[in-house]
Image (cartoon, rainbow, N blue to C red; front, side, top):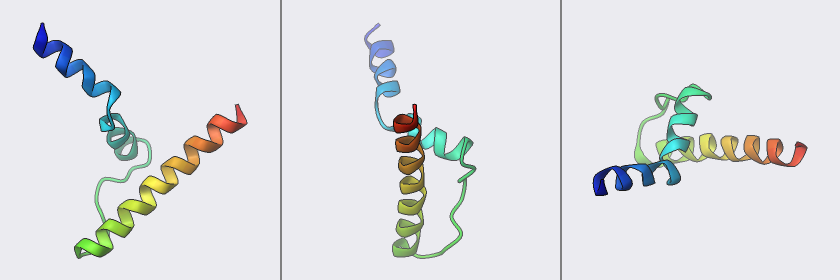
Length: 60
């Protein structure tokens, strides 16, 4: 039971966002090489997700 409760907490963390970005936005791999460039590309993907979500929340 403790293990199931702990596993259920994962639904409330950041993990679902990774799945949404991968599945809905189709962001499965990066196009650039190097940690700085990959970090920038990931920031763009997450920023796009946040803007999309903010638009949905404010538009109703």
